Length: 309
Image 1 (cartoon, helix red, strand yellow):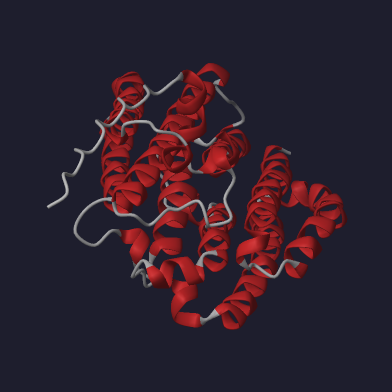
Image 2 (cartoon, helix red, strand yellow):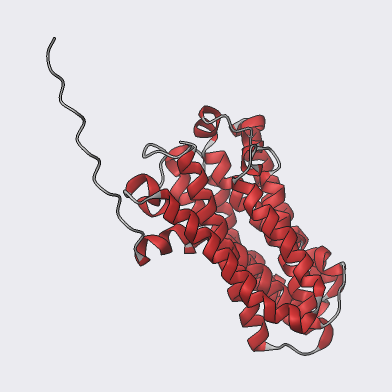
């Protein structure tokens, strides 16, 4: 019997560098956290006539930390489940654990650290504004963990777009409005409908492009259930609903801001038209994610300006 050589010992994994940590935090997705805070700040200024700039900046940092934590958690759980691979039409910066020999435990530690930092900074906000933002943040934190972790992650279900939209696009403005205005109002959730749609579309963009990959991974996302053509039709309808929601809310509650809406529509139309032409297929994934994040920035900025007027 021929002798067999023992397997060569595996080289130790590299440590997570600051550059790779930033890639795990995925700054290109931060509009999902930044725009809701801007909208809440605009609504608070419109209804109270004042805005605490440093406090708004602190809320912005907290929400960005939460978004970065979501991204790191998602990368970690996708990697350990084998849902990510180099054949998924993603940039290297979007799949740190796939393209770099980094220990996945360090990515998990980063995700936990980012979430903990958000809560530590939030302690000051809670001390100043009371228990309501703490309760909302606790719900958001549970959603952050359950989105990627657990026996059946939310990201594997057809409610992923709705959950991400409501948590990031709805609960963030609700909590931030209470902190900045000094009073709790469910109307803030109504005013957040455009950001709920915008954030949900970020996830729907990703999931529609990843239908084939998600089917292979056993995911039952909304685009998987609909199929690409029906998912694209629903996507196009939500794009129109997004713009219409901004116009209707501004007209009903903040009519002085209608002048901004007049400029918003022609300015945002090229981005909307570009998204409508995108096939939302795997080869177009990188471009589609860039387009939807840019559209979130454009419409979110116009909407916040309309509220501030």
